[in-house]
Length: 458
Ligand code: SF4
Image (cartoon, rainbow, N blue to C red; front, side, top):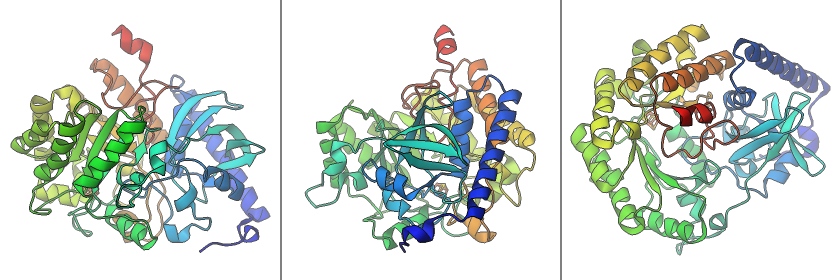
């Protein structure tokens, strides 16, 4: 429900709390800069924004409404549910922001927006400039992405292109969530950090025209419109929930392959084709490969053996951790090792009540997984976990729990960067440019920490 401007004005006490919280964040960033001096400060700010979210003043949100807004392309990636948004942030918050210049002289840093009205990170309008502040301290200017031409077009059915084929990573990646739900269902199967099924419900009840399965013809029509007017997008991802039995008569590989096949027949070579699925058996991986998929994301979510079975109970019971890993390695022979890029959810290994409590120990565990896969030429990547209120983990334990500490994320970036460098792996394909000031991948800083000069020397 919308409230008046006066209802939203922070009380003096809230202002003081925000200021204190902001001071605490900046002190922590300062401490980590001293501890890890070769980590770009931009990545510390980016990871903190991703783990804590960002709030918007009413004026800032009004300003943002004229730019590209959040499409809710798969999960909510918010730290409050739509019911708790007093300013309709779900309709007006931007998909991503770019931080530039300002008192901290930041290099351009692209960050996905996670709404959190209580975050010490806040966007505020100063004259014609949108600013990022931490508490009361100004950090940088915020740039927003113009609404792409294809976002203003509809399919013949009236369905907006951006509902069928939204883009993220500043327009680099077309995100095709062709199955909006997951057949891992309920507390005994869903990954505990994931709100895909609940987000579907809240978006539908908020009036967003989500459909469980995107019709193939709609996807092709939306892509044709993008192809006609856009040259910024370079890759697409076919994704959605896991299919443990059948969906419309098809198993998981065939379901996702049917989209890839049709897209590649019509737009061969236009985009880099990527797919996120379970770690499928090799013969099913070949179905995806034969359909044209070039980059395969069999996400393993968390490395730690004990926590995997608790946090990913469906993956544990349907496939099992060792078999999941075996299939990831086997995928190297199908797609080429550099094209197998499994994701993990960075920080979930510190979730309550079962996770690590020490950031160093948590990263030590996760580094084992990095070493394991990278020694096979396979380069995992990660997204930053933010506790989503509709995920089983948070619902099950009542109060919204804190994210992993920033120290964990800082240590992880160093571990990933060093491991990637030691194994002399190529820049992961399908993510756009690497390096601080260049990277577009917006849900973690793994692309920001690749040292481009060192990379080209190796
Ligand atoms: S497999 Fe896990 S992370 Fe993926 S959609 Fe299903 S519940 Fe969510």
